[in-house]
Image (cartoon, rainbow, N blue to C red):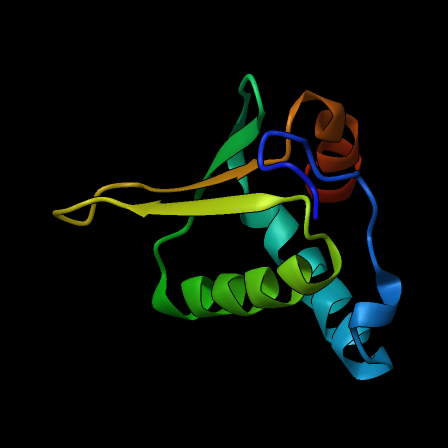
Length: 107
């Protein structure tokens, strides 16, 4: 067992998804990339504003559920503010994950 303070290796397990799930994950990412607005680099990763449109939020949830199966080193926090305020997605995996995040999510 890995000590809790040790970072997870930056490795994606492509076998964690079936071919159908992988295709769906890639299709969702292609659909979602354009709605990631105002990317901000943070110490551990990135934050973006996303559309609060219910259908897009549902697709984002589906994408995150698939992504976390293959990229277990990533952490996702979705912040939905009161009064129809902005929705923010925080994606991080430590400083070493930034290059992966930049090229995968925000390219």
